[in-house]
Length: 254
View: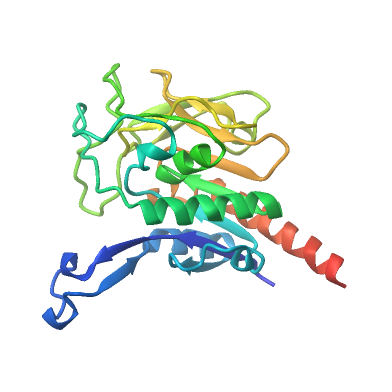
């Protein structure tokens, strides 16, 4: 059977949707980028979208892997950071959503406890670090690489704006080789790694671009692999790990 891959999303006011009927003005909508589902399905998994009410261990017990997606800044109260201010580097700090922070951190902690595969993307990469007690850079200085791209593309896909170098012997290097080029849509980054977290990839300016937990199927990437035209290797890896974990669980249950 194809493994079930859970995907986190965000909750937005209905009034932010173009053309929504005014009778829904007081409602909210759950939003999930379709690219995640598309890439997971292409890699051989079944995407499952989780609303905020699906943060408990009983949900994690029914899925085979977890993807934590991009979005708003993580509430600095959770990692000891300064009060949020407008970004000095051009990146617009999005409205903090503490309920989303709590839901995703809970999912990560339950997923780690169960031992299923976890992929953190952009904000999700940062959430993974914060969930393990790490800290973030609140606003990246300009050191020659503009990490928050303002470029507009007809199909919404970013260019591959800078290189990332990976540490030999890491999971990231096994998937991507010693170097790759990535898109870049962030103004914050991992600072002090959380408990057990290893930095496995950096941009040429030193910004952390990949983290992992050695010996566990856990990977965080600061870029957006779901926005690449081609299928990036993190998705087949995730589905393979989910399938292996699902098979092992089935064997134990039998």
